[in-house]
Length: 443
Ligand code: IFM
Image 1 (cartoon, rainbow, N blue to C red):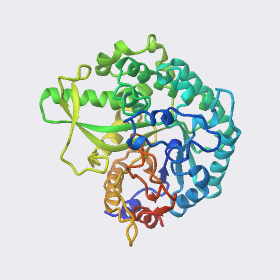
Image 2: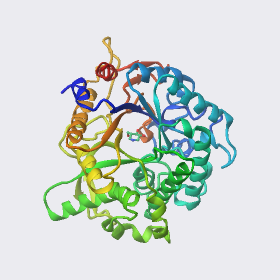
Image 3: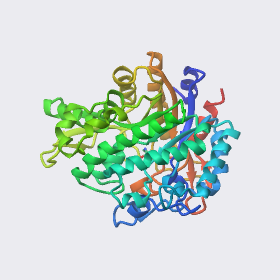
Image 4: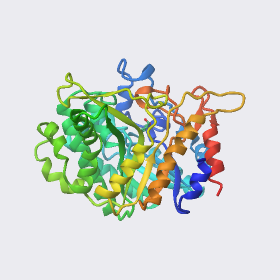
């Protein structure tokens, strides 16, 4: 099925948008932005491809009008973006940077002028270095500073935001960054990871409470998911795939929607959680208005005796892969949508807040033929259409990403955009996938 025929099946009020994040596109050296822990992490030898950082990124700080025009000309009616904490509070927790306020004022007003609904994330991984120096997400104070930062955001921008979400992908903030060591701060330390797994959830809850105190009525969370499948049908592989799913997904949805952590994961990481964690569970489970799912791929899980903590590893699967070497497994998306609706958030609307693929795109005489990306969107939207037909309240879909951008530890080497960016000249060139969306959204 084509994008157009899939879109035609979806309800008229279904939201189509695109997503980005501050550090990946804005350019952290512009506008008196403070240093983030990604600026520092990028300097660590071998941490990031080519030691590239987000100093310039897509220069969105200066080119935001062109970028908003591209969103609107593509036919999208919603834009999921994030605020940069170090841009707004560069030196201290109280010292607001007027350039940061002015940038987001213009950006949000620019969306509204173009009929684009602003969907904001408060934290998409650019932690101020000044807080990282004090332990970052292993320090409970960071959760409280995050609540104070939320207050700044809500006071200045809250009434213009269609939806808000405190944290993008808490698994990445905690496990990927403190146990697997792939993202800033690059730790491989279960003691740090145990703290971060809880403190990021506390930060989410405290921030959601502040947004609610300001009267916001559309507060959600954005959880990333990987569809864990056992390497074979042995009981051990099945148990380990379930544990992987527990650490990656259930940890976050069970705490947010049921005020508890899953027993199988607690068995592994309870000794490393901060003391008194039980007292925070009611805050973590602050009621929400929607839930967001970021979905890209599956993980094939096998036993690994050398991994002392979890006893598992991910192995290569046999499905077609994207340029990230991620398998294309659209059935995982509907698995999570169904499970959320059945077990965790039966009364809440669900949004796919990110979905897309990296492709080794290049400019040709006849444009940028990213056919694989179009097929990827089609296969995942087909899953969405099916679950909606089965009665599940999926209300919107945001493609990742508007632009090729800074793909974290992969630097600028991986291209997720609907729009190609030449990082030498900053020229934007829409890919065929952009035109496919544009045509399909003319309805
Ligand atoms: O680029 C990231 C984004 O920042 C968070 N979700 C996954 C994307 C692709 O890796």
